[in-house]
Image 1 (cartoon, rainbow, N blue to C red):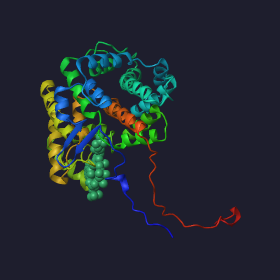
Image 2: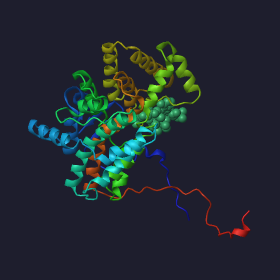
Image 3: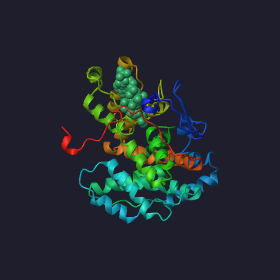
Image 4: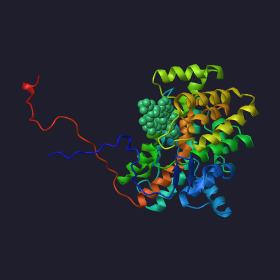
Length: 377
Ligand code: ACO
């Protein structure tokens, strides 16, 4: 007798663990890291404070934050072998494939890679948070025929990344906007890439393997890959006057409009609220208001025609574009922020582990006899 199994496709509503990291109320559009509202963290905090908060549970004191900034800055350099590998990649290599490969490769340079103790894993969390930014910047430098820019210890995580990307120290406003973007993307409860990371760790595999899984999962266009696709859409729409027809056609052709909809939020994603404002202000400051205007009109059309709200990927696209960042770096940038949440989740997973091993409902042929080769049709 075969037991009937209930299929929960997409694992919607399935609770796989208790966590004290991030909470979401999707009905009212509330997101909190360790009980702090995302809007307040974005307004008053820094990325370094948020990483500390995620890893340690409390906001840092001034001296804890100073020490943590120094610890991160000390970890920014990546092994030469990683840069050599980036140089060996063929022209046109996918940016997330490059990041995924580099993250995986970091393991072989870390003598503690296989040490699953809490202390070693915390150290790896900090090292990965520092180094992923260096890797993404080095990838961009190398593929454009430039030398990687060595990290600076005196700059914040956000400012140092922009500096390594361009070779120019960013102005305070750009660094601040980028810092806010990093805060907004730092963690998001049991999303697909975090689940991947936890699943890999639950086999008692190492942190680098778990983060490699997470990067691969974030890459998809239904998850972190959506931000780059949003920018392609905004460019195709071309102007606010085209938005209504463009969206109508896309929906009539059963296309997904990137940057809209969410498994958890049934109203506006609070990160989109912050990013909408940033996109608008940046456009006004730089004299390029059209990207915000197109985005806003697309948003109104998608709401009117499909009742869907923007998610974090929607306004981050125009914001990064106006900051002069190449479209295919948006998802790697998402990853270099989300590393904080991924690693904080891994610390929780290792501390209270049980193998993650779901089930499937077999619907193939029932038991049958092996057919010898000569008798097969
Ligand atoms: N455009 C058009 N239709 C959509 C969209 C969208 N962006 N999002 C959901 N829908 C529709 C689906 O077509 C489906 O309609 P149907 O019932 O008529 O077939 C219905 O809404 C439910 O969609 P599901 O895919 O079942 O909902 P789910 O909760 O799995 O989807 C997801 C969440 C994948 C994010 C979806 O909204 C989507 O594809 N959005 C576009 C991609 C995107 O922006 N991803 C980034 C999400 S945020 C993040 O990961 C960082």
